[in-house]
Length: 166
Image (cartoon, rainbow, N blue to C red):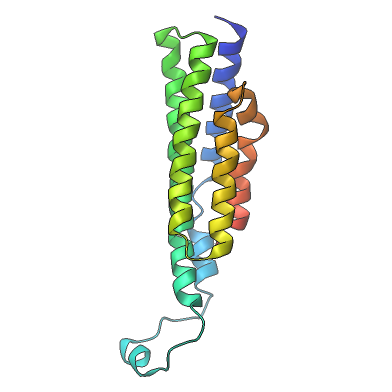
């Protein structure tokens, strides 16, 4: 087995483990969207209240939903990368074939993140996700995508955990 194939598999496994270790971020984001002690307004209160000049509640709800979906997309993409990498052993792929497969997986992941960016109502979240998709696209074009994953991709999930929240 060539050294590049071994390196690609190790990088994919390390990334997948790192992303999966990140865990589910739903609880902190839900808490950020609805502070402790806050209750949702009753239907009668909502209909009698004057419209708010700020769409904060709508943006916050959409942001929480979009951020949860981005988490799911990143984890699913990482699992696909790890699964495909493991399957490459039985298929006896060359290092270049493994790299091409990884590039395709990263391009799909970037498209999935970009789709979530288009859904985001908050312009800051939209910009964050578009930038993230661009970074993942850069990995899909890298000459050594496995090296890109271990040097760059591993920083994306923690960044999204910090920045993508209501």
